[in-house]
Length: 202
Image (cartoon, rainbow, N blue to C red):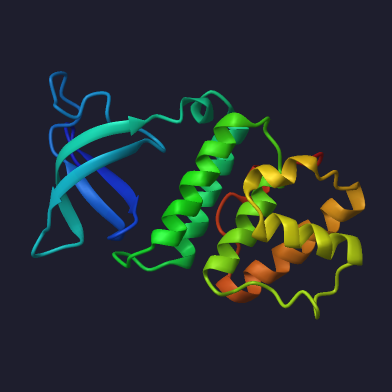
């Protein structure tokens, strides 16, 4: 919140990357933004660039999708938040990110459709690392052959392809720990919220 009546809204876009806007008067009862701004909403919008800061003026919003199942399930909300934190930590502001944008949209759509599961987080992490050019060298990775095969499917196939995978508890622990160390090594620290986004049973 910027003032009592205004909001700061962060966006991920394909052409402008991550940008921040101020929605002036958004908290007023008769605001033109009423019902159009919330967590993980998909919308078309226009804005005016600020000449003095990275906080731009939001002008119009046309709501496309609310992703309502995410806000009805605390685990899904935590998973969406973690994915957003990962993107924020791994990318620069106002840099075009069409592939990352598309990946995030696919992730949110899949999150809305499926039962809460930690496996989708592994898939998102692997897919995003691949898009960022940080995919692990699986030939050198200290993982069992079965887990390596799983990582190939999760990183290269659509999210739905993971539905038929049944990871053992040892594979879950193995992949979770490997990515834990890999993310810290390449990003300096874990993106905020990873522990809450993962569950023990998949």
